[in-house]
Length: 458
Image (cartoon, rainbow, N blue to C red):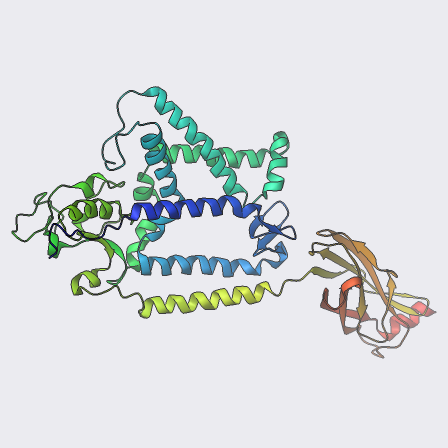
C-alpha cells in the first residue's frame, strides 16, 4: 500500500468529459454548414426528397442506403454497450450535455444559484427568482439554437434561414422548432435526470447486452468494504471492517446526478458519467490510496487484471459492423447521376404509313449537380426513334416527362394468332458525358399480329 506522502496520480474524468462535450458540440454545429459541390456530409431532406451522405447526394429513389445506415446505427449501439456499458449516456448523449450546461455552467458557475457542482443532491437556493428566471431565459435561447441545429440535418441551413424570413409560408417547420424547443426547456429544467431513469428506453435494454467484461462504474467492495446487503438494504455508511478503506464520506453519493449510491452495485440509473469516481479519487488521493470507484469491468476487479476488450462478442460485433460499413461504402459508389422510369401508354401500338409505332412515357431525372443534355438509343437495329428527334436540356435536380415513340418498318414477326412482344434495351445518357452518366432499362416493343397489320393497310 502506498504511503500517505506518495499519493496516487489523480485522473479526473470530468475534465475529459467536458473536452469531449465541447468537441461534439462544435462538430454538431459546424457539420451542417460544410458542403462539397453543394452536397452535405449528412442531410435527410424531405423537402427536396434527397439524402446527402459523405458529401454525395442521393435521390429518394436511391434510398437503398438507409437500411445500411440503420443497421450500422443499431449495431454500433450494441457494440458500444457491450464494450463500454452506458458510455454513450455519460459521454455523448445530448441529454447529459444539456444538463451539464444548464446545471453546472449556468446555474452553478455563472449565476451561483447552486452552491457547487460537487453536490448535486441539494436543491438550488431558496428565492433568487430573478436569477432563476434568467437561467430559464438563457436556456430557452440555447434550446432554440439546439432545435435549429437538429433541424439543419433535415432542412439545410441555407434554406432554413430563408424559410424563417417567411414564417407564414412554413408553418410545419415552425411547429417542429417550437415543439423541440419547448421539449428541451421542459426536459432539461423540470424533468432533469428523470428522463434518463424513467423515459429513455436505453436504460432498460442495456443490461441484456452486458457481460462480466463490460466496462462499468464499479465500487471495489474487496478494498472498500460492503455497504449494502444482497437485498439492497443499506447496512451503514462506513463499513466497520479494520481493512475496509471506504471512509464513509459519501462524496460519491452527493455528486451523483441520478441520485444513486454506486456502492450498492450496478443500477439502471447509472449513466457512466464517473462523477463518483472523480469524487472518490479526490478523497482517496489525500490518503495516498487508489480510488475505490473506477471505470472497469467486474472480471478486471475480481482478477486484478486489465480489462479484456477483445473477446468473442466484441469481435463478432466488430466484424459485422465492418461488413455493414463496407457494403455502405460500396453501395454509395453506385450512385446514378440520372434516373429513368419507362411506362407504356394505354395504346399498345399504332399502324401508320407502313410503320408500327409504340408509345412510351419516359420520366427523366437529373440527379447530378450540373445541367445536362439527354438523349437515348435503342439496341434493336430495326427499331428507330420517331420522337423526340433531338436531345433535350434538363437542369440539375429537375425532372422531365417525355412521350417517346419508337417505330419499325421491318417485319419483326409473322405470328398471325397473337401479338409478339419484342424485348429491347433502352440506354439513356447525357450527351456531354455519355461514358459517365448513363442508365440502361429493359423494355418491350409490341409487334401486332399479321391480321391487324393487313387490315390497317387495306
